[in-house]
Image (tube, rainbow, N blue to C red; front, side):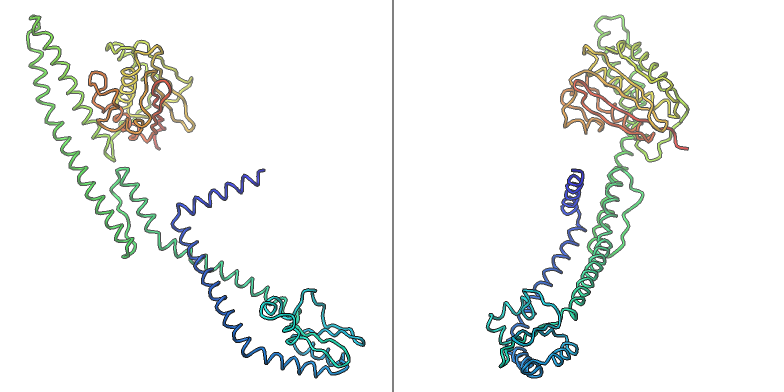
Length: 452
């Protein structure tokens, strides 16, 4: 049973390699082409030799067999037959009323040169080629000596197989070298997709794959320039907005709040200004964290204490459901070196997102901290709300993206909270995952220990 499972796995891997590996397919194509060429060549040569055999070699063989039979004589002479068998690579078999002798044992189905002559001639034709009858009733049958030929085909077969394997290995190495630029292009595309444009794709040759690598490098350079221009514009706008927003908030707070008609408008304007202030702050922080060299002020931090502080702040701020949030932390949780301000932002955004979309459920929002192998800590935040569609999970941490159920700005935010959370995790070298917990949404974050 185990052998059958191993065979099935091997066949599955072979099918996958043949389906998805260009190298394997090219080597298989080379082997099939070599096999087809060999078959066609051998078939053509066999046909050509058969024509030559009928027209030229057969009369010579008949004449030669006649001479050998005449040399043995009538009645057959064992001494002469033995001398012929010792001198030539032929076998001799004599049967008759006076002499029963054979130079070497012959298989029952031995008929001259085996299947080849059987295809070209009938029984009577074989008698004319290799069998002679003497006047005193003896039958003399000639054939190829097995002792002279039995090792040679075996050696030729092994040599042919070895040569085929060597040529296959050479072809595989050549194909691997030929397609090496594809590996460089794949690795470069992954780097560019991850935002690392510092190392271009090496151009090793000047053929079509080299031209493709140059084109991908040019495309990555253009994309990098557009991203830098977008970030520069976003930072400039964010910086320029901070001063007028501060002045607008100051002027709004100076409005008299004694008039009942003015107070609701004043409070609404202050709320909108606070949203705009937070949006500008989030944009600036996201651009700082998106850089390849995000500066982190690491210090040993007890994440359980930090999470409790964040929960207390949210409860004091009057966020619905914050007072019911539950924290479960493993005892003896290690203190890890993190940027405390950014991890606080991470925890606050995760809890705020969970409370916004699941704070009204019967089950409270839950947070858990678990020790991970290697000294890291896993943070899990889960709500018991409606969750999100499965197709939306991959987009939750994208900037300014919100599922349809959270389009309203009153409950859905602007779509930067989870994006900032992912950037904080990536800046710390951690891992990020989101899944539907049925019910609710669960976000799992793993923060590794600081690198030494």
